[in-house]
Length: 497
Image (tube, rainbow, N blue to C red):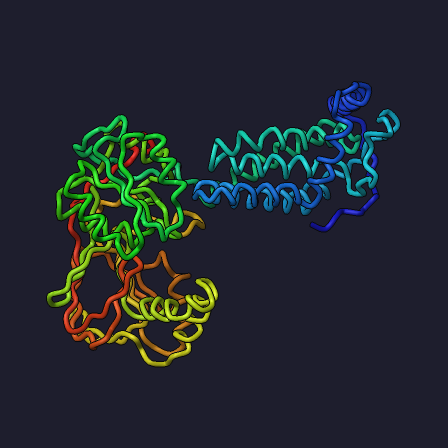
């Protein structure tokens, strides 16, 4: 944010309407300066200073993100993105287009005045723009957080008139520009509630007003016991089974023998195991996101315990597709993705180093080791032709990009596998990057994409790795990927569709 320090203010010519508006603006400023606002002398000047350079809003975003909810993290990110766009617009266009001098401080009591007066031009107010942009951006993603932030944003905007550094019209124009910046960001990266999936027929599942008949198996390794207990507060007669990661499969089997609805709290791997048990026992599944990555639950529309409890109480559910891979006698299901090539090797390398250096450093180290190799991790025959590949990705449903937003699924029952391959060749890192940038394209020199319901791979070398929903297994020979259309019934709050 480079300040506009050009003090040359062109003298405006006479214009009757504009002169009346400016005179009204000055009278409103003087009226505000003459008022005695209880308790404001201690609060508003400090609040105004705390918003310099966006410090207040960065701290607020950190507090919102610390709530550890996906909606809170998205709200914080959207608020900061909106603030950044508003600040960029103010400093490149706004301040330089209308070079209005700051108000005269004579009517403003000395105790209200800021110790360091701003040297930029007055119109529009950058503080008001940042406050409105952040608050509006947060509210568009999370109305609850927006309601909490709004009074602070309003107070910051008000403080600019109270301390005598802006006219009321400066603040109003800045706030309008900030709100517009937030809506512009939503145009580039839509909020989740604007991405409406196709309508699906409601599945026939039991409504459990108090949760009786629901047994939730929670993986202690996910570290989200507070979220499970919050769900029990909403569904007091539901039963909770907490277990260690290694006991999850056995506890899911026990729960399935006596539950009307099988519930699960954990990451994608835990949810995958629960889906397999629910399918085998013919039970509906209730998913509470509780891991580091919760792609299935989030694409399903379940972000927290409130979403899930609403669906369980009202008996709202849909049927979704399930992916399946088969290799000889081995079978496995995937709710999100299945991949061969570089990614499974990266997962294996990461798991080797993470106990010693931690998850994120291990991921970086694994990527460096895997991408430096010159050998292709996957050779397979597709359609009767042999191909060296860096990666083959199959998504359970079509992954879309909307605006600049990362890929997500709008329809979990579209009947297709979203297959992407990165061709073999030199420099795997560059090819993977080029394939990512060309994501919306169906074909490029680096990658190809196709949507099918079934894919057969032959000639897979022994020891090749296949990753599915975070789990890794070895495959060889012939590998088949296929869809099981609308095979799984899952609770989902239909009111949000």
